[in-house]
Amino acid sequence: MRLLCAFPEAMSSSSSCPPSCLALVALFLALLLHFSLSFHAGDRRPLPVDRATGLKEKTLILLDVSTKNPVRTVNENFLSLQLDPSIIHDGWLDFLSSKRLVTLARGLSPAFLRFGGKRTDFLQFQNLRNPAKSRGGPGPDYYLKNYEDEPNNYRSMHGRAVNGSQLGKDYIQLKSLLQPIRIYSRASLYGPNIGRPRKNVIALLDGFMKVAGSTVDAVTWQHCYIDGRVVKVMDFLKTRLLDTLSDQIRKIQKVVNTYTPGKKIWLEGVVTTSAGGTNNLSDSYAAGFLWLNTLGMLANQGIDVVIRHSFFDHGYNHLVDQNFNPLPDYWLSLLYKRLIGPKVLAVHVAGLQRKPRPGRVIRDKLRIYAHCTNHHNHNYVRGSITLFIINLHRSRKKIKLAGTLRDKLVHQYLLQPYGQEGLKSKSVQLNGQLLVMVDDGTLPELKPRPLRAGRTLVIPPVTMGFYVVKNVNALACRYR
Image (cartoon, rainbow, N blue to C red; front, side):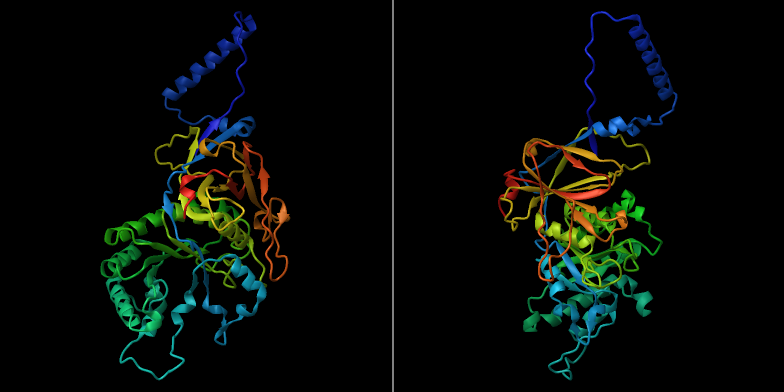
């Protein structure tokens, strides 16, 4: 992150200088010489100037966005949802009878709906019209049942392993079985839905892509941020954790582009921990930092679709709890759906840039992403731009819009935790107003806070928000 630091203007100098002033100058030069000698002697510890309160208040970030061409264009259904088989009761879905839950689901449309999860590995499919009908060998139900979720874990779950080549051959067989069936003849096929891309998983994906890369419509994998250890609220603020996803994306893309350059890639399941989330944390405001950064990072690196596991009633990573109450990540997802379009724009931040030191990676605590504003949102004309910003700093940050964004009207949608629980809160406020459903059939109006043209954006500490820059007339955003 490049910072532009504004300092008070220097006092005007006069032709003469009193002795007291000369003494101060001499003292300053002596100190300067001392620090210079220390530096050349090998003392490279940075001076703690960035910790001064006065400097923090005067730090200003200049922000501009490239508006001519998008750097990426993701799927219209980029943010999609998953339902876990655990919600099946007596062969039907209970939530379809809930007006409240249907209203919440409708708010996140359009989206793909994936029906999957660990229990899917043990589901069996049967022909209800003719259960006795035989295909003279394994039919689509056999392959759907046996290759549903994380094939790299089959040994631990089923006592038998499968390699990538065999998995690819089975996908080809499944495709050939589906095509003669009229209802499935044009169905899309996605896979192999591997887990975290460790060495053995990458080997499985490599074998699969070599055999069946052209058979699937998109390559899929799953991401888990934390493997089964105790999670603390501060873990959600660690940039090192947020950045683990970027490295995994590059590993997946490298294998996919080796065999099928340009093939779409989907993140078909993302959770905080392998145990389905952490109680009182994965469903809190703090978890939103991971979720919003996931959305920004995936789109920025060209992942076509991300499927949130789960929409409702599974573990602690869901968007809606068992009482049909929307959780903080639901409201975050709703704002994303309303404001963010599929075209990704390049962000340019100007100012003083920290120099990397050997063996140390600079991890930004202020994360800024930019998209064309959703063209389905009739509150904004085409050509508008939406920024979403994550501030993980313990101090507020000031952002001055520059270039094509200078002196434009801005609508602020600032999300903050509501109540005494702070980051652990399961309720959120939008621009100071608590977000709750009006009734079972009505979502609340998401009211922006208008900011006057040219005003500096002030991002409170440890918060996230969306900022629609109106009437930019961005060329990249004028057309679909």
